[in-house]
Image 1 (cartoon, rainbow, N blue to C red):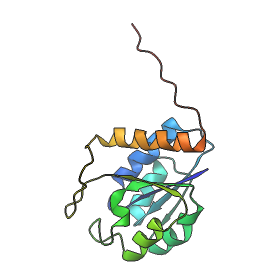
Image 2: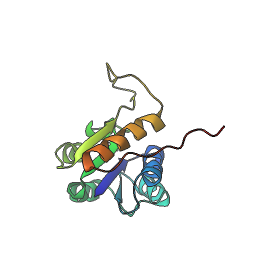
Image 3: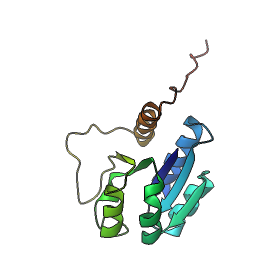
Length: 147
């Protein structure tokens, strides 16, 4: 199974996603870090993604390798992320074959109506639970609190 994580700008959200994927999924799950810029890709690689590539062409070429795509919702909005999401990137991601799990991160020029805001870590955990369910992986076992 291949999970593509897409991020831009400073790569902070992508780094959090990769970190949680590594903590909550088996090590044989391949994480593909696709950054709109080299900084975002580098940070996701440091968080232990398996492979990484940067830029519009790399995203367009690599995105169809992914079974799941996990990213902020802005990746399908042309010109979002301060212009880093080109129309070609947005179209490639929206049209990719993999299941898209888009996190409802608020942007300065658009609002997502009808979605309850939750902390990013909870949004990522929910997305990972969806991946587990759709991929037929067992749920994460949690230990009961110690007394």
